[in-house]
Each structure stands twice: as structure tokens, then as C-alpha cells.
Image (cartoon, rainbow, N blue to C red; front, side):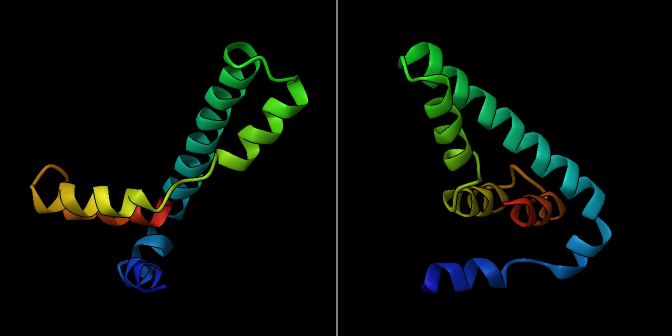
Length: 92
């Protein structure tokens, strides 16, 4: 519970309002790519049926909470600027 409260507190509503087109395209692209990779791995690599691969792809295509930790660490180490971290946090 505490993790999600702190992750939600780091969300900047102003970034969401000003960057919504970028967020929309980024989120859709991320989900489409992740779904495609999982679907292909399920069908061709793991031998799942097409419907099972699609089901697993839909279930796992969303972003993960660990991304919040990675983005914050990258910001702290100076790898990513604060503005990009805010955008990436909003996209997860």
C-alpha cells in the first residue's frame, strides 16, 4: 500500500495535462510492442495456441511498478532529466 501511495504522490498532474498527446502515443506504442513480443514468444517460442498467446499478451502488456524504482534511480544518478522522469512516471 505505501509503495503505491508514494508512486502516486510522484505523479505530476500538470505533466499529464500538458503532455497528454505524447503520453497517449507512448502508452499505446509501449503496450502494442510488449503485446507483440509476448504474443510471438508464446506462440512460436513456448508452443501456446494463438488464443492462449493473445490472452497472455493482453494480461502482461501493461507497465510494471518496478519502473517507478528504475526511473527514480536513473534520475538520482543523473542518467535521465527530471522532466523525462515525470513523463515516464505518468506513462506507467
